[in-house]
Image (cartoon, rainbow, N blue to C red; front, top):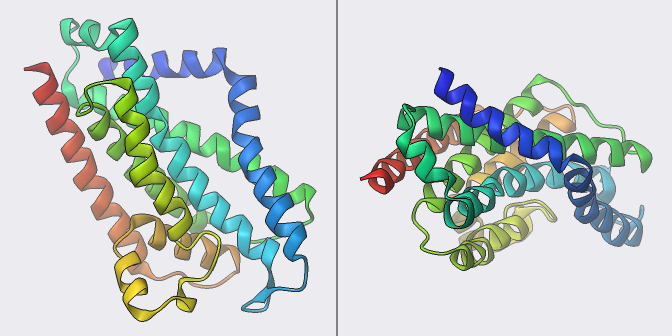
Length: 244
């Protein structure tokens, strides 16, 4: 437990030091999407009886919880390749599961901050949705999935430059194809089936359903839980291998 707290506390101190810049960075992309897409579409486009802005906010919540939690991978790699912090953790009496849990929780914390920024922006744009417990559960599970994936992949890359390639080939396509900006039901059936394997697709559906006051499918929560546990197990395996 002490090892887990130490890992998380280190990341929290870094986040506190960069807090203003982090918050500003978290606000830029959602603000641009809201201006470019929300105002451009206006009330001319309605999806399932909702304005496009109302449709967009839950998608941004899902996307930001993914990108911000996955962003912990960059901090891990900077610490590994430039500050050699991982070697210090190797020498310290910290169990691997404590290290993984601390980094995952740090990624989830970043995601929750980003969601707070989006909710404030949504209020400023006049969007009123339902933000109940099931929405936050979907957010937590989604951030758990991608924070765990981030730790697993961060232990596999050989350089800091490789991390940007993973973001370009894994996270960016998922951000645009996971039901964040448009309903997947408008795609061909084969595309819907292909995209249904993405965790972000199920997170987007669950978050949007709860935001609209509807009952989300329990299968989405089950799949996110299963994916998060699998990625956490993979992260633990890659950390064990990196320490050998």
